[in-house]
Image (cartoon, rainbow, N blue to C red; front, side, top):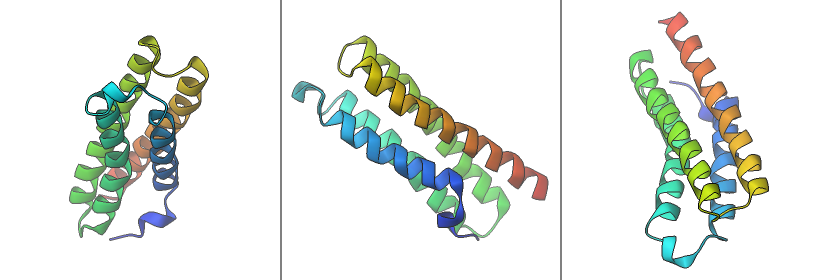
Length: 119
C-alpha cells in the first residue's frame, strides 16, 4: 500500500480531470448525457483507479488498477480528438488537454513498469 499523493502519475491525472471538466463546460448542452459524460467519467476514472490501486495490499492488485487507469486515459485521448473533429472544442483546447493526457499515460505506463520490476 502506498500513498497516491506521492505519485507524479496521480498529480497529472488530477490535473487532467480538472482540465476535462473545464473544457467540457464549454461543449454543447445536448452533449451533456453523451460525450461530456463519457469524457468526465474517463477523466475521473484515471485518477480514481490510481487511488484505488494504491489502497490495495498487493502489487498484483495495484497493477490491475493501473492498467484500468491507463485504458481510461487512452479512451479519453480518443474522446478529445473526436470532440475537436466535431468542433465541440477548439484545436487549442484539444492540444492543451491532449498533452496532459499523453504525459499522464506515459507516467502511468512508467509506474506499471516499475511495479512489475518490484513483483
